[in-house]
Every structure is written in structure tokens, then in C-alpha cells.
Length: 312
Image (cartoon, rainbow, N blue to C red; front, side, top):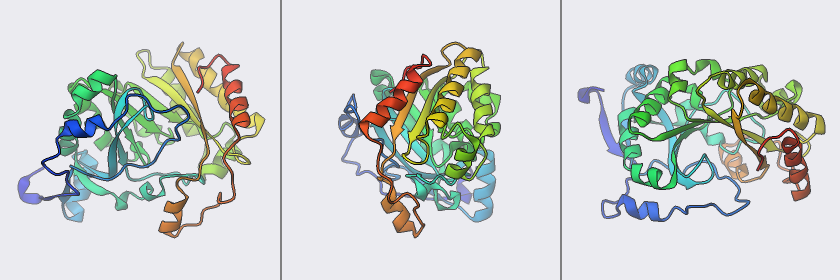
């Protein structure tokens, strides 16, 4: 991006007296058992936000030189193996009732960050990734709302020898080119329901694009590895038939390519994102919904294990 077209300013920059190693030491090598995943990141510390006019911003985003970014953070054992640098992008086509990142739904609400800037930040943590078996994860929002930007980040990371993952609903799977998927080592595929009607109630969208994307991933001879994620919400996604449909679908991916799905994560619903809905002035329909009991969670996990799936 031409320097004459951009002005740059640091966004909550990390003080120069605090080295990256000090940040690394704060990241545990193993997350405590039963840790509830947090969302989203803590901010854009250390990244430079680009100041561009609207026309240049749209052009740069279409070309992948610029992305709409909510935040980034380092975390262990949540968004893939090892210590991950997870980047949360803005923009999502779904309207999930239990979304715990409602502040990432609108692409216009993110900050413009260049792919070069983000890759420079990613490169600083290569030693951490190597030591812990970690890497980068692109999350959101929905990463495939910004396929050109995601593709640049994934390609750059692979050139640096860094493990890559994307966290996606799969609804926009058609936007992921084969070339992009060549640069993805792991897909965290959020299968929100196995029943089309339940899926539409949860997301306002259709289920089939997610199912088709999963089948496409499984049909790729060289990968990527797939971790299926299923959010267990009492009174919404916990019906036995719905769970069985998700388990059966997940197992079918391993029939397409043996061991395509190496892990299933049943994620208990929580209320950690409720304050964000309140802050945004949006109606939250699950205010009275309680987290699933340990007994229910284990019964659902057992349903996946009955299909031969490693489940956590």
C-alpha cells in the first residue's frame, strides 16, 4: 500500500520497555481442565491501525491488503493446538442467538489493519509457536467474510513455517478458494445444529452450506485436519435427535477421508457474552437459559463417542 495514501497511528501500543518475551511468559502451556473459552481478544495492542479514506479502504480490502480487525490475543489450548495467536476479524452473516462476540458482527465496526502489519506481528512469535506446537488462528466474526485478507495472512504464515487454523461456521465456505485451503492446516468447523429448522432458529440461515463445506474439506486428500465444534444450549440444541444428526454427520466426514475429523469439542453454553449484547443495545433472547449440567454435557459427548469420534 502506497505510503502517500496512508497515515498510521499506534492503537494502544505496547510500551517499548515491555519485550515480547514478557508477554509470552504470561501464557500458560496448558489451559486448566474445563476452562470456558473466552471471546473475543483484548484489543489491537501493538498493531498499527491504518487511516484511509472509504474508497481506498474498500479497494484494499477487496485485494486483501487491508482487513477489518477487532482484536488479537495469545492463548493456549482454546483455538487449536499449542499457543495460538488468534486474530478476531469483523463481519459475520449469521445472527446466532448465543453469540458471545456480538461486537464482531459488523465489518464496519472493525479497525483497518494491513496484512503486512499483522504478518510482522505474527512473525515475532515463531519461537513460541515452535516451542509449543502452536500457530495462528483466524477467527471472528466469520473469517470467510474477508477471504482475500485471510488468504494473504495464511499464505504469509505458511511462508514463515507457522501452523495455521481458521475458526468458521462454514456457511461461507464457497468463498474459500482451493488455494486458500492449501494454506490451512486445521479447520475449527462450528456445526451449530444437525437439524435444518433448529439451525435456522439458532442462526437465521440455512444449514446446507455448512454441511457442504465440511464434505469439501473431507474430500481433500491432503487435509486440512478438522475439529468439529458443537455448542450445547439447553432448550435449543440439546434435543437427542439434533445431537445425533450432528454426530452422524461428523462421523460421515471420516468415511470420506479416514481421520479427517480428529477431534470433537462439545462446548457448554455460557452467559459470558451477555454484557456485550446489553452494551450494544441488542435484545438477548437467552437471558434465562442456564448452562447445561455436567451430566447433560457428558451424555452428549458420549453420543459423539458412540460414533468413534474423539470427543472433549
